[in-house]
Amino acid sequence: GAGPRAVPFAAATRAVELFAAARGRVAGGVVTITGGEPFLDYSLLCHLTGWIRKKYPRFGVEVECNGTLLTPRRCERLIGLGADLWVRFNGSKAATDPFLKFAAGGGSVFDTVAANLAALTGAQRRRVCVSALQYAGGVGRLEEGFAYLRRWEFKEAVADLAVYDGWTPARVADLRWALRGVRASYLAGLVAGSLPWPQPSRIYGIDLEPRLRPEFPPAALTLSCDGVFFPCPARDLTSALPFAVGSARTGLDLERLQAFYARLDAALEAAGS
Image (cartoon, rainbow, N blue to C red; front, top):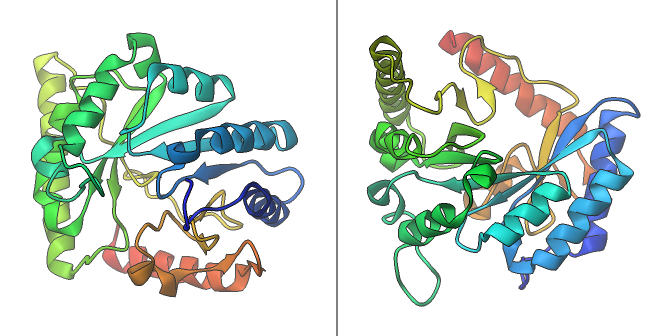
């Protein structure tokens, strides 16, 4: 978005070109535009989305927003440009407002996002993806978040982890229990004949069953609002910077990225996921 932590159009397009070079001439992929909040500079967001879809039609474009600036008109325009629109929030008031707050002016983030989602038409909501964002300290709210999301007919919904948060072994164990509760609720709905929508089958874009090994070269990368490459979205550079894998200025460090992927794969094997 606009402000001191903003990526200008030239830097953003350079980052996409680096990503395209890493993927090769034929392979597809996904370019994620995140933040910060990309809707703060909506004109730039639309310009960049249109440029990507025109120059690299084999790439999908995902726009991640927090929903506070979402309107039916903006939603329709971005989808018309070929973007998949993701609204990332915690899925319930109790799981949202303690963690997400406005920088100025006060008010409830959850109430604002819920009102904006309600303003969309049913057809628009069926073309919008949502996620129940989970911080380590609020993982117990996972089922509550999905219970709220089931009231709407979105295109897709996932449980989305704040992966750079403080995930201790105890918190990971809590997450496993929370996921069991979500799955149990889903299966109970199937048995009762009232399918709870949507199916919580994914965490951060990785199918829970069966497990998928990380793809390399990566099919998706994130450029932060500081112009730094990360394996997945990074909003707090203080905790995430050790995981940086290059920048729009210096290029993409594929060897470092591959080393992270190898460690992730080894950890998944050890956990028996």
